[in-house]
Amino acid sequence: MVTLSQRRFFMLAFSLFVAIPGFTLYSGYQMGLSHTKSHPDDLSIAVESELDTQRLKLAEVTRKAEENLNALALRLGTLQAHVIRLDALGQRLTSMAKLDKGEFDFDSPPAQGGPVEADAGTAITVPDFVGSLNELSVQIEDRSKQLAVLETMLMSRNLQAEVMPTGRPVNRGWLSSFFGLRTDPFTGLRVHHSGVDFAGKLGSDVVTVAAGVVNFAGKRSGYGNLVEINHGNGYMTRYGHNLENLVKVGETVKKGQVISKMGTSGRSTGPHVHFEVIVNGRAVNPRKYINASDAPL
Image 1 (tube, rainbow, N blue to C red):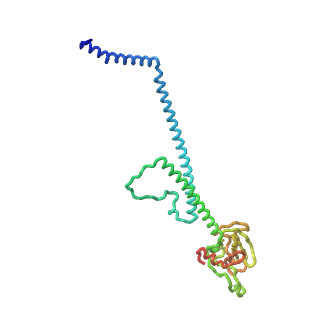
Image 2 (cartoon, rainbow, N blue to C red):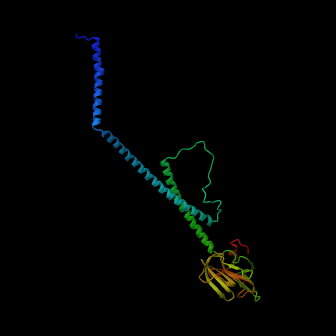
């Protein structure tokens, strides 16, 4: 039986658990150091390779972010163009419909408000934002189409109002003779009067009661200096006994335009305008067309 003294036991234990592992670690360290010294660029190459990989990933993320921003910028530009068009259309409609500009002010954002809620709300996410943007785009396009239809309707209505005879043929004057049977001022006989007469100051303005095209401008028996205007849809008006005609045949006139000066030419007893409304070739009582504008006789 082999026995070991205490001294030898400690020496053997030291060799097994300290000296040999230490020598092994030291040898490995020296080998690694020797390898590093013999290949000094390996670590640098590994680091540079990892940096290149990260650069590529960053470039890809940046590219995608720029593409998304460009897409959002394009959509935002489209929406801004729609809003500008809607503002311009809204201003035209406000003017055409004769609405109060203070009530419909397209230069300021709509008035909004409300009390603070207990729930502070949540931040919008990117998908929610994009979805809301798309929904807003659809709504704006829909409203744009609806307002365009409304504009067309108002324009048609305004055009119809422009060519429909309404109002008085004078800015100043009074009704001096009615439509229908009356005593002729020259013969004293009962005769039919095909229009109404507005008396006033010699040389005062005579205005057209609707837009149209001058069909006749000159002298005509009984009428003196006459202006005849065709308004379309079978409507025509006549303005007689003028001192001077200010329009010519073929000229386009607007509603309320001065077309002549009040006179007493032709078969007349004093300064006045003889006003007729002809519908489909037949003279009718002008009174209902005058009253249609709420203008006093």
